[in-house]
Length: 445
Image 1: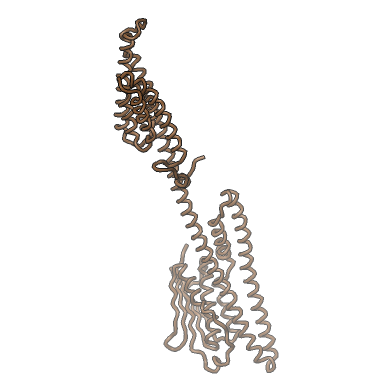
Image 2 (image 1 turned 120 degrees about the vertical axis):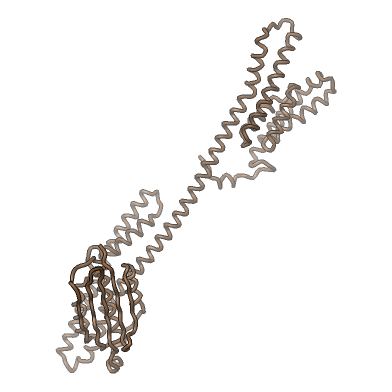
């Protein structure tokens, strides 16, 4: 099983230059074996060189112990092995040193030069020993052509295998490190993508919460405002004019039922969207091996919140006349004027235009009860414009009107709706002391 770069780095903790204790133990063991080998071979070297036996042994032990630093200074190990080759010492050191050198990341020209020097040294030593063979053994009868052939074969057999094996192991190690770095990079990228997906999902959830709150505000505020106005009128005329009180009570009931109907439709859309969200979440878990399908949840929530608009189930411009009539029935003096050729638009445009007029009339009920109000719609070639303007409210009616709470989000919600469709929204007091709300929505599709 391949380990990541962080796991490899965490596993490093050997002494001195070793990355692991296991590597230190291996090098110490090889150094000990090489010292013993060179010490034993040092006795024959001492006899041939005519020096004390102990000197040859000490020389061999010291030379063989150099193998301990093969990972720290591989070039030094190979040079020492080449240097003691004429003394017929360091066979193990030469093999391990060449392998270690070839497995490092040193330039190939350095590896090739040292391997060539070792090959030449071994070739010369083997050639000399074979040439001296007939002088020491009278029965040895070897042709002149066999000496160089055997020498070359012996030199290649001792030099080529460790070099080739070292090159292979080094290339494989570099490949594994490259794959490990790539895996770490991919893991970091996946983590970054997951964080971005979480941020996008959180942003989408916030947008949907804002949108749902705006829809709830539009549905509830207008109907309840009218109900409060009618309830106040009902209380005022209950004893003086029972018939008018009955009519106001009927209007209150109708508006309450309309509010409940719109709320029920909206909650039905959210409930069906939640069911589709659960199905998509289950599919995401099955397909992604337990990963949370944040993008699928956000997409399903957005689809659930906007399905009513896409299917045209919400209010439209044709309902503006009824909306104005309800305000007139509540005692508001309101006039509706329509300019241009009446036609149908995209569902989201009609719903936005309706909500702007609805919220503007709701604000008149809240803040300017009894004020005369003008609602204007203009159907143009490339856009649709709407304006709701009220005059200053009569002081008597304003003082005696039922006080309606205001959350301060009506104008913000209207502006968000219009701007989301690329339109322009303007609101503010008029010079006469009233208030005006204007919006222009460009046509699309």
